Image (cartoon, rainbow, N blue to C red; front, side, top):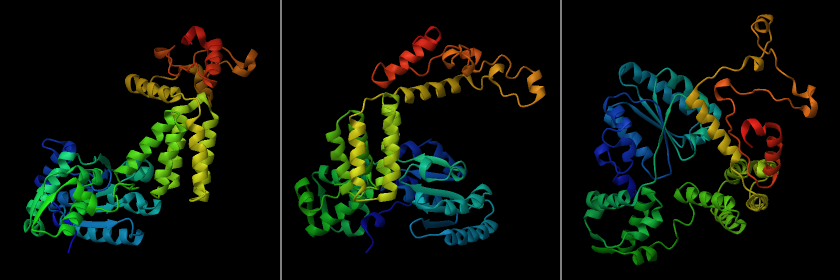
Length: 424
């Protein structure tokens, strides 16, 4: 018998539960589906939130040929075979491009992803990829630029309860029983926002009771689910919650909490490279120039765990996490690039001052490129006060060091050099 989640899988948008922000009435994606103007898409979100189901519904709604591959067990050869079939279908359905759905597309290698580029670019297929990982890291830029990324969220409690009632009222097996949902908190906790996990747990409880009259309570759920399904799921909601707690503990300078959450991830089989990558980001975002050595240590940690792996890499991760937690903190570099990017969005492409421009040709020199530029090393203390920003934003300060640790020294340096201009 098929699992409950498969038996009650919805077949149209009106039956689909959750993700109102992307497929609700008048949403952009829903309009694109209804107008049959669907672009290639990558669905990004945690497991069990309806990525595969939504892809299947889209294909049925548009009445297009549908091909599905799983990145776990498909190679370049499989991709090419499916694209060849899709090309033939495209000849029969010229106005209806076939849909190629690739589950867990982040598991495809670069060469496998490269093999998709031509068919997506030429419109042979409409690609729908599904991933639990950040596409910016896991999908090659050439393919990512040809797709729209649509973010799916963990299901809310109200969505999960709707799923339970859908199962009770629509599944032929469950309809033969009288099931009362007296308490649902334990089931919702186990689910972690994952609809598939919720339905699997619910089915286990119902099958264990095996009665015609069933009353679901928190105590019954705990008794039936001996293993705590929500202890840690490295591909589910706990994956996101625990890494969040880990990073926030380090940012908050609590090494004890950081080590606890690290141990939770290790016990759950989390990829060491994932943990190390987050530490590397934190070292720059949350510590920055308050302790520049933090980035060096985090980078060495990232390289080391990719060579060593578990179980030994847990020691390196522990050393790095405790060091970063005990390090002085500053997000000033992070804030500086945010402010500068905001400036660029607001003021556009301001011209580079002539004295800063490159002058590789005589014509450029005649036009004044590079003229009056002062070479800093020719002056005392290797510094000369000159303008480096476009005239329109002269004097704008983006980097404002803290008065803490190493950044206090940087502030003094900048005050000495630029105090009159930038108000350090």
